[in-house]
Image: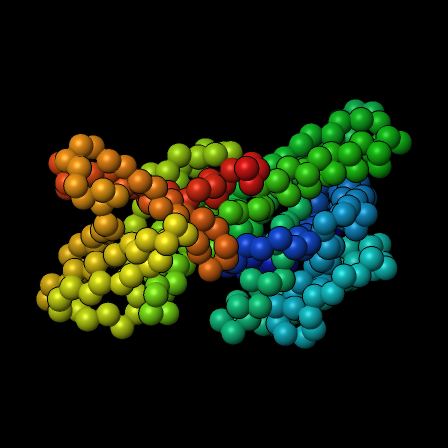
Length: 321
């Protein structure tokens, strides 16, 4: 019987470290043993191997075997691309027993940081027989965003290889589209929070945090915060200046009182101080990773009434345009 305890340990390690820097690269995919809903372990193993083989053949993905994953987590060896792995041996009862023992004997906090680099995506599934047909339910989950996609394949067993490969290929295409996050860092996948880091004119760093809805693609922005740099005076006002792409200075004032941050205010010169009519201007800031943020300012009667901050590109959008 395929071991389920090892699978649970693997997923626990992955989920504990969802937040990570997201840059374009081949995604590391681990295929965990499929479960049998009808005690047909041979069918479950067959479905697992078909799925793993499709990952190996798919461009933009690196197959990570359960053995390689656990070894990477416990520090035994680094993850490497290995398309010559013996899948029959990898998903055998003996191999899965060894994986389970290795994972159980090395559950330490020191290993959790390595779990972050070991896999980006996990594929699992269920298998059963239904009369003359077989029914396979593959599922793919992004460990960075926790977005999950699933499919159902129901066919004669002779057609299983082709039909399941197509289904897994489609799931890989779906997960690849959501993996690109247009932000410096995804800090909270569950709440769709991202940050951008902006350099000040005196080489300090200011963090811009944005909280989005869970809709996909192109969710709505719910909240934006400007977080202070480290080492600021906790008893007074500190002003940090950022140079915009338009060559104008944006002042960001952090107001502390009794050691607590009371408010953050933003200011920049009025486009035309001689006018008392309504004026507006958009200034752009560039993050460390090269993303643009837009400050939309509005003045009325010489006073600033609005200072709205948005990423130029929706970080969870479906295209960089």
